[in-house]
Length: 323
Image (cartoon, rainbow, N blue to C red; front, side):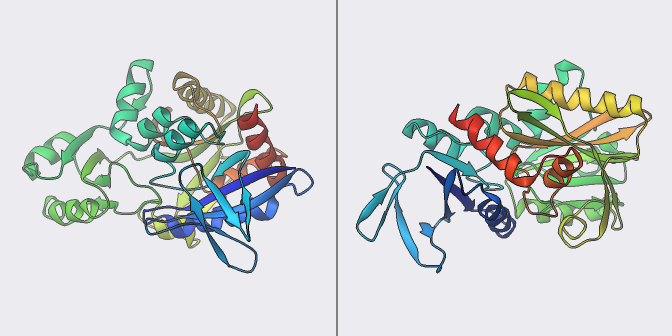
């Protein structure tokens, strides 16, 4: 039996969702093959939490834990941390230094994809279209006229490195920009302001399944709110239609682009890319490398549509990491 550390929590606003994802992984882990250990990673403590909710501190020197006098080490780490330090490369680099296999992509890919601005810049030469964007770093002079002149109205103001739609605003008038920028700065010191793309929003899961890179059935997102925000994502204020209502040609087209991005970046593990299709052209918004794994999340929905049960999905991720 292999010991699998399921890391969850994290240092960002997404920690609550990560705890749910991690617990889903723990629940569906194949217990005939693996011993699962829930590891909570927080700024103030790294702890193993047993089934009675007793906490045992993690030894950061070798990522082991001492439980009632016996030392437990891990054969593999299942990474379920959304946001920092699990999705931005920090944990990936740490485990690489320790020589412990983990289920997500490598540290460079994690850092790159976590930075929306840098990701889109790297993919641009490969013909992957994006929204028109304007970038700000904290402390930059804010020239609202210049911003609107470049991206137009309405536009989206987003933290460059944050997930789950925290800190995002849809801006419909120039006067709203300063407030939206302040909101985004609460999540990150870099901001991306993008033109509004009026089209069909889809989410495309790409995974390595049994050694082959496959595109999962695509999900179409129809938000009841102004956009696919936190409420729409987690509080049922959206319709998620899998498979998406796209023509066969468009399904093929957007799938090919998502798969190309996965291959170009030498990705591993799970990825979920968001696109808006405008005039038959998919425009990429971002790529998530630790997408939500709650039972309501998109990747589990897409896997189910592909006939892949959650236990198989998680076993596959662990086996690929161990290989």
